Structures are given as structure tokens and as C-alpha cells.
Image (cartoon, rainbow, N blue to C red; front, side, top):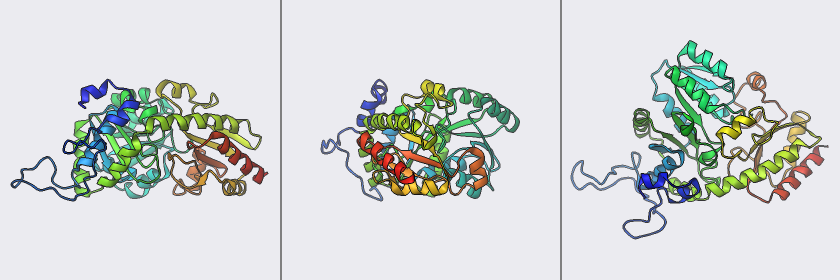
Length: 389
């Protein structure tokens, strides 16, 4: 299907048909896995568009076509992990560049920026939900890149992408949005003015907790060519088999996201009314500080919930050890429900003082709500509350 034909289709159709044309050789409705490292050339330098799988692979090409269509982008790159995407995007800027980043980001991103890339780039961490602070920081430092998570991980703070991207353009700063929590189904940062969008495909895009992967989507040809050159040179390309698995998982993305959200809204309301809960953070609740912004820029509120249990580490550990359906594990976005303790698990690499300054306390619990029957999930949480009590 041609790009112009795809553009007129709804996302629920795109997830199935973008990059999903029947195989030209056999007519197979499902694309084959081109599990090959190299491709035969008819003469030196003359080939059919593929030379070596690190550079390009037909299965990965199909996935990239799908990803580009979902985010309304001209270009997409599929890589071996979300951290590969983050690394190569940063490496595409000159050393010494200033990067402004949200103060509440995934622990792995914070670790990468503060312990690996900190000697090459100048990082400034700020609360990007404060647009006045964003403008003052960009005006003073003229950064090359503004790195956003919306919603953030794990506090689910929501930056006004459209307003912030306009400010960034004013100071000739590129805007990058990690859209992992929302997926292209619930939010499209490029349409809101962002320049670059990334996802950890490990999460909602694949959705089955059996692949690690990352992707970058953009309309900026210059950045795309730089990042592809780095990907080809350094090598963190998505394998053919993993690309095929993601293509398979992505077909149900639209219906999965709706089920994640349906369950999450019910669980968030249940938690909000529970006597053993201090507070609940979920974009779909009116109590969320940026609820109005969420309604404006999102098409749904997602499946991630953060809540603060009354008590501290002791009570949190007891609660986490008492659930049965919610699996105690890092990651998120799979069909199964997961639960974790950011201070000990996903954000342990962030110093305690920094964590507490931004609000990641020892009684914070993060839920990735799956697509099981919501009554069973609530019953599971209820038993854990009783165990703590």
C-alpha cells in the first residue's frame, strides 16, 4: 500500500496493513522472516537494495514502514533497544552540546546521561511541565536538544508538547519525545510539533514481553541520515526475527491499548478511594495536575498508574510480595499486569536525594495494568492491601 493511501486510514487499520503487504514471491499473507546476514550481488555494488543485515533487512524495512505510518513520519529506524536509540540520537549532536532533559525520566535514561554521556555533553535537568522554566532555560543555554517524556516515568507528569515545541523552535532547539507510555495510538508528538519521537518497542508496541527493541521516528531527514549512519557504523540494529515479532505484536496495538486504558481507569478510581492509599497519579483522573493537558493532547490515558501507599519501604515490600496476578517485575506494556517499586528497581540508579527531590519516595508503587479481567486484578490488589493491614 502506497504512503498516500496509508495516510487516509485510521490507526487501527494502519497497525495491521502498514508494511504488511502480501509477499510478492509467494503471496503469503504474513511477511517472511529474512533470517540472513548478507545478500547476493549481481555484480560489485549492484544489488536489490540490500547488502548486509546490519545496514538493512527486508523484515526490518517492513517494521520501519509500519512505525513511520503510525507516528505520521517520513522516516523510522528500528534498533535493538530503547537505550540504543537514546545513545545514537545524542551521538548525532556535536560533543559539547547542551541537552535539556526532564527531571523525571526513566532511570536507564538518567544513568546513560549522567554516567556515560556526561563527559561529552552538558546535561541540564528541569521540570518540563513548567513552560516558563523551559523558556528561561532554553533562552539562557541555547541547547541543541530538549528531551521530554510525556507522561514521565514514574510520576506521570505531562508536558504540554505543543506549547513546549513552539518554545524550542523559537530558540532553534530540536524537541525529542519519548512516547513509550502512550504509544502512537494515544499520542502523536510529531503532529504536536515535536521533531523526534522514540519508543521502547519492548513495551506497548510489541506488547508481549518477549522482545527488547527501540525505534526512532522523524520527518527531519538530516537527523535521520546521521542516526542511520551511526546505527550502521556502531551496529545496534533490530534483528530480523525480533522485527518480525514486533510486526506480529503491533497488529493488536489499537485494541490492546483500549483494554489497558479501560482496566486502568477502573483500578485508578479503586485506588483513589482506598483508605490505605495516600494518593494516586493517573492522567485520566480529574485529580491529576495536568489532566486538562492530557485531554488536549492525548487520545487516551494509557495503562500506567503510580500510587503512594501509606507507610514506607516495609509496607511497600509487603504489598509487592503479596500480589499474585500482578507480576513483580521491571518493564511495562505487556498484556500481563506488572507491579514494581521504582526506588528499588527501575530508578535505583538515580541517587536517593535526587529521587526524593522530584517525588520518587519509598512508598511509591508503579502499576502496568494489563488486559486481564479487571475484577480479578482489583481482587488481587485488595488481598495485598489486607496483607499489609
